[in-house]
Length: 286
Image 1 (cartoon, rainbow, N blue to C red):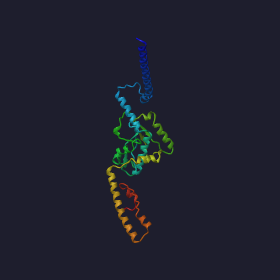
Image 2 (spheres, rainbow, N blue to C red):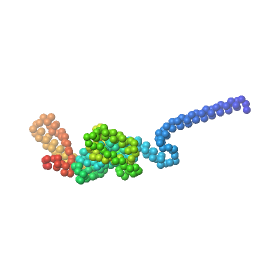
Image 3 (spheres, helix red, strand yellow):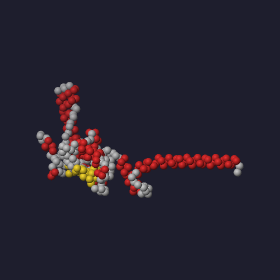
Image 4 (cartoon, rainbow, N blue to C red):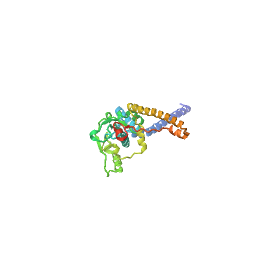
């Protein structure tokens, strides 16, 4: 073999070695980059069996629930929500925000069709008989979440959390109780069931804007909305007739423009109540 052939062979081998070296470096870099990612995803799992589809699927579902902000496999249960509808809405929002603080799904609570808090006269009514369940979760997605009792797997016991009361039970102690319940052995339970009084009476830790966020997700079921629309429609019809008469009278009296504009600008506040509640609060029955 002549010198020219040897030179060509040497260059060929050199190029091959350089190419192989770059491939090895690229492979090492890729391993170093992926290692912390894989360790983060599967930390605490021991030896990973890549053919275990159930394990891979469980990690995928866990990551999906974390991405949405509220865990779907952990729940909070609250007592029946009572008193008037407005107080029940506040109670419900407070329960939602408590569940949010614990990073748990709130089990759909029972509302009350009763007007007053009397143990013997409480008439429970399901939340989804008053408000739209799916609509609530859609509008509040990632902020708070409602779940059904059918979602429970009953793999762990229920932890009863006694809500404090009385003068010695301060806002700070209440918050500390919630913080302790969000970690450790308490958080390992599938369901934390709060035992205590109506959520309306719980200590308040949440800003008004968070209450507003929950209220905006509450949409009445169609049967209630349609009845409310009928009332609003009647009020508007009567209002148009009254405005028409008022404008006619003002024109006959040659009232100035300012007085006419005031009469033609109606602002009506409607306070809707249920059952016999209106008779209790209204002195003039007519």
